[in-house]
Amino acid sequence: MMPMGILRSFAILLLAAALVAAQEEPTFRTGVNVVVVPTVVTDSDGSIIHGLQPSDFRLTDNDKLQKISVSTEYTPISLVIAIQANRTSESALERIKKIGPTLQTLVTGEQGEVAILAYDHRVQVLQEFTSDTVKLETALGQLKAGSSSAVMNDAVVTASRMLSKRPPDRRRILLLIGETRDVASAAKPKQALTDLQFSNVLVYSVNMNRFVNALSAKPEAPRPDPFPPGARASAPHSPNLPAYSSQTYGGATNSANFIPMLVEIFKATKSIFVDNPIEVYTKWTGGKEHAFVTQRDLDSAISAIGTELHSQYVITYAPSNRDEGGFHDIEVAIMNRPGLKVRARPGYWVAAQPNP
Image (cartoon, rainbow, N blue to C red):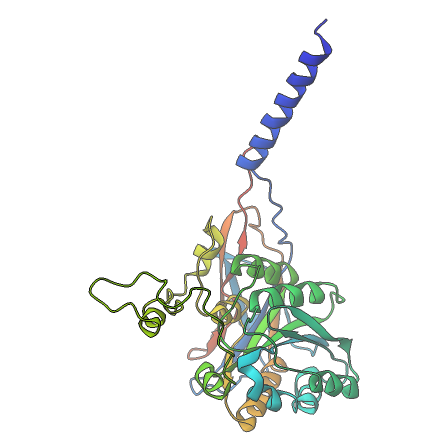
């Protein structure tokens, strides 16, 4: 018999080898059993087309024709509103506080429910799901400008998980009201996209104007310089003065300005910078971006979103090719109606399965 110490060492080695193998070949569950594709159909002038029948639609998944179900009946909505409430959005928050009645009548309807989040360096639930207008207006009235961060990705993840717990017979909508950038989230776009996909969440946005916010924001109190005057190394042939040092070593203001393709976000092994996450989330789910500066802009945008939500065709299907790994391209077409335009989610992602 082997000594007990050798057996214990051998067991530890086997466990370590198993952990290494698990890291090299992770197992993913696809999580894609039924795909939901909210679809908007418009004419060449952008007017929404009503009255189409299920037989008018054709959907392919990776060029494979799918058996689909098309609902034209109104389905109750569960809506999460995630609002940027940081230092730069203070002036915009005064307008957002007035949108309660508009949301209730145009976006959610009589059977709808709304939850409200606010985010700066944290995500706060101001109101759980409710259809009570008074509670919604009270929650909106609690909006206050916070820190300089704006953890949009974290807010999307929180909203997706809240919506995932709503009954499956409800439509799940996320409305983002904020600037088109994320500042200091722990979550990355890949995680947020995955949660949106698994929860079948449709994302719309009403974007704050970053330039207007910056102009109207109260200036931050200057932080004390940790270095005494003259302590910083200066550039060659330049005077070593405190003012010159602060100009030379000012904060980093340059950043990469590109939006990678959805496929690249899922394939990336490292974090990649996304300048406009809102564009990624709306396009990924089939939603749409709006923008506002004035109260009228904001009310009009919410009204337009409400009109669209009540005019969508909701297509669902169980993919016949769900075992195919990678990005699944979705194409929705209208049969025998040339000139009509279709907006729907472009696809979904399935993690490749490990070799047996």
